[in-house]
Length: 476
Image (cartoon, rainbow, N blue to C red):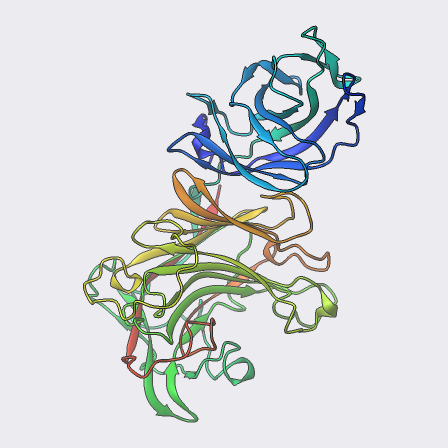
């Protein structure tokens, strides 16, 4: 979403690119071999500071931020921060104090400049052919060691602008629309859906049904129910439906559902609104997981009743399109219903179940909307229009380009947001640049740290989940 003017308190991160360096004639030191990096991790609106990180600086110096002069050079008349000393040799997490009233426009260019000491700060001029190496006459000091160009990306901290509704199911017909959905039955991968589950999915009305008159619903609801019962070879049953072979979507769409997981209240009970690949690479007869990617828009489990998890799963290596149990990357963030942001601590852990029946901030207590805005370079997860996880597909999308997956919690628009990268690890397939189909599924049990953990003896069944509607919009 484009914002014409914003305070720096909304700034999620900065990209820094080395422009040039100079020679310190007074000390006889050539700084052309200057190494290190500086980047901003997050912003504190309360005291107008930027949280910065310097990495392996080859020399210490004073960091200041400047405006750009419009010609790809720093404007020395528009310094916007108080000097901050960066020590050499190792990484530091420090805070840069911004000058009062600092405001920045979207996609504005700034400069981060490292000085050899504070002294008189405006002691150089920009020379396009020689870099930042022309001193002014101030006590014989040549102060600049290196400069970083900073490009401010468009603020992605709130849901995108949506266009036309292109697909939807309001679940008002009283039966499953088989032109849109498939029943999925059985026990799935390895006989446990690949997550250690204990349930068998069925197409029976006991597990997939419809109901009117649900408090808070816009109309009729799809009801997916898990039950404790002996059925064929299992002691639990469940329901799951998908749009495979019928509808799929990729970048350029908002995908959202309104859900109340009312019966999901104990460890081992869970519900997911998620997506899997609908395409495969040319010349391949299949696409292995996790090489093809997975998007968990809503993963709500009874063992963590006050938080929802939004996650991407992907592979680090192509491995000839073959499964390797070690080849699995995943990046996700929790959403806390009470605070409407990432909780603190960011990993809430199992516990506090079952929530009281009148607990207003448990996810099982009421309907919420769960969705993603799927762009060509990133994916934004939101609950009730509160963005809480932003995943960038490419290395360098949100952090320094270093060949490493990264994840941190940043303050955006005054809210804690998980920012992560990257999932395009190999050229054979970029998982989140292709279409996927959606799945609605409930389950029972799981391995440790998977789908809510093992079922506990006191868990109550049947456990019903109400889905008010599912909608897909074109993003403008």
